[in-house]
Length: 221
Ligand code: CA
Image (cartoon, rainbow, N blue to C red; front, side, top):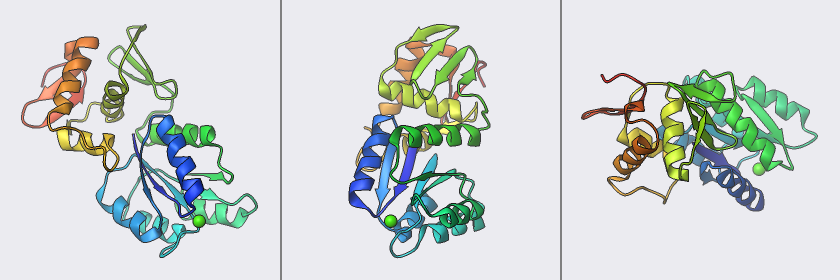
């Protein structure tokens, strides 16, 4: 899952990015509100972590612009411990959740997983489809009740497809949702991972829609 992090405090930004990468997220990090807006306008992130006190354009303004543009991206704001009014302004401005500084990285990752799950229309902690059960927190997968060992990349690909809930994703959309800046995949990587996933799961669980992309699900198109 790909996240945009907007935080101008270098040590905090570094720590948050490292913590989220550790939890399995792909993270792009910007240091001001204008850059945050620009990136959120062009990249289909699964969620954003937004500091409210940002240079060039504050976090609340970025948030209000996003919601004015009808963006439904889950947004979690970072606020100072004592700033109740910031939390209220964030939530009223369209934030879905907040975490107070100093940031507990385990809590932040858990809250992001919950936001992303809910935005995909899932209320339970597990993503389930056609005998598959994926646990984003434990990063584990079961097929018909039996654990399946996947590499991190295979897990991430399956996660993106399951979040799409049967919708077809193009190879470009999958790449955008998997890869942070500077970590682009080689040109045929998605095909390779799909091929491996089919072998580890059941071939028919991953549909190829020729010339279009891939989807999770049982029947052929
Ligand atoms: Ca700040």
